[in-house]
Image (cartoon, rainbow, N blue to C red; front, side):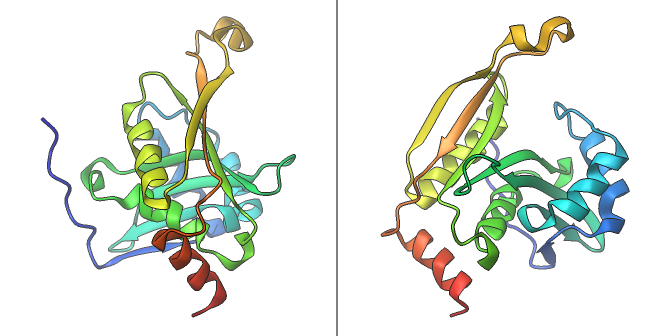
Length: 185
């Protein structure tokens, strides 16, 4: 039986990452298995090069959540979410989904009509998150094999599946709210 969903504290802030967040993001991801940790340098690049497609969640001046993404280089209408992490004590409150919605609401991402991510078969938390987001946006979800075990060669990394949400249904209340926010209403 799953725990009932807790409320998001009113005192949280979701914003674009700043350069000085890099080390905090490194330690956050390091404490969020099964996420693969990258170098501090990688997180500094996310903060400087990909901050408009990423989000940080703060609670009482502490970084408690992080979502990194980028616009797909071959599909300019697609936001690819690379990593999403929430501190253990803040999970189950909808923070991950709020970070994704915060990114999608940004005016500079007005042409985004799809969201993609990859997950392993045993990552039920991520699967649940992205299926919930698709329901909220009333958008179809597809899943296909993406990176097979063979491409990981000797690393024993499990197969990654690509989840694709979209196109976003422009008639849903959630989508209309995203557009109203982007238009500054």
